[in-house]
Image (tube, rainbow, N blue to C red; front, side, top):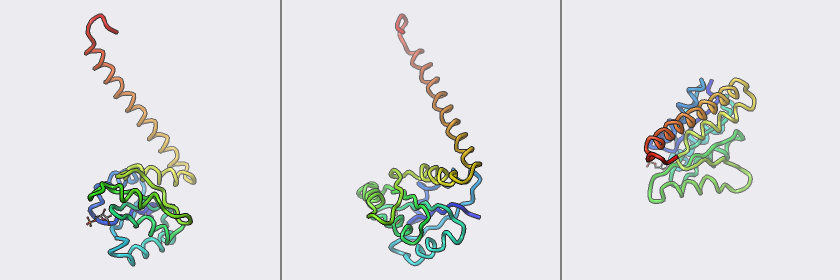
Length: 171
Ligand code: RP5
């Protein structure tokens, strides 16, 4: 049963959200995915969001561009945590979507990720699930350790390259 739902305003948003989807799948989670627009198919959005908890979802990631009302509209139909991802594109390059998502009025909150932050949305969703799931918490620790190891390995390569370039006699 899917514990995370990803809803996007258009199939054109999928390339931004796919890395997050893959991340969730790597953690062994089933994910419900839907493309539906707050403006073009509002009834479909309502149906998705209003029934989300009943279907077993625990957290929803909502990605949209332009006047991105989708995360807020989803949040208006459910008390599940909603993570909004502003998607770049169009004349304002995601600033419009960022403001639409981050400036929710009091009462119906949405967590706002960076513009095009589909992967972080998945990691944040995993942190929420980890509150009540030790296996996911353990896997998140492993993820962070592997990430740190990768940074250290890149630094070693960088240091070797710098030292190789250093003129003789210099440190
Ligand atoms: C938004 O408008 C969607 O989330 C998408 O980011 C943007 C453009 O949609 P399409 O014209 O590509 O369907 O509602």
